Length: 169
Image 1: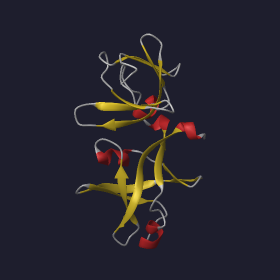
Image 2 (image 1 turned 120 degrees about the vertical axis):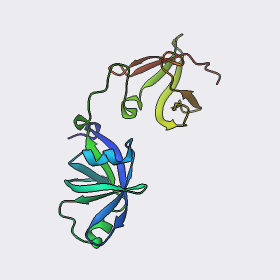
Image 3 (image 1 turned 90 degrees about the horizontal axis):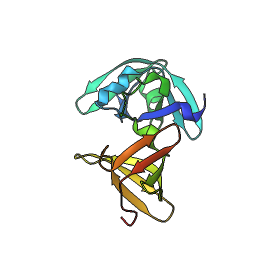
Image 4 (image 1 turned 45 degrees about the vertical axis):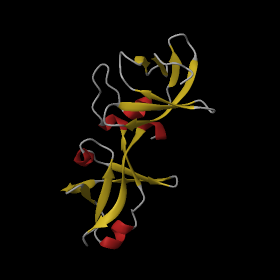
């Protein structure tokens, strides 16, 4: 499986109890949705290992999980700092006009007039709306992800997003 087939959905950031459970920092919304996916592909420093989820729950603001073969606190502690990835095919197909953030990262961004603004580096959640962080090597632009307003067209197949945005911003 190539790196392109994976999507990062969280990180293991601690241990929970003495029976090998791990604390998870989840990027899913809601947080506990990360527990709907198995197997997880844990990745760190170029190493990847497949782990099967055998249990989990929301624990206050945290998500905790039990992984097959991880039976004690020491084994769980060895997983701290590993990224949690899933096979992109595990995700439901988005509706028309909806996108996973991972699909937007790497898209070229141009104005309606064809002026290149850069590449989508990542997205941020601001509360009001999501924001594209577009970089061109010299400049970083923050462009609101408002479809039909600032974002006019998203063409995943051709790796291009057309925006209504002043290049001087």
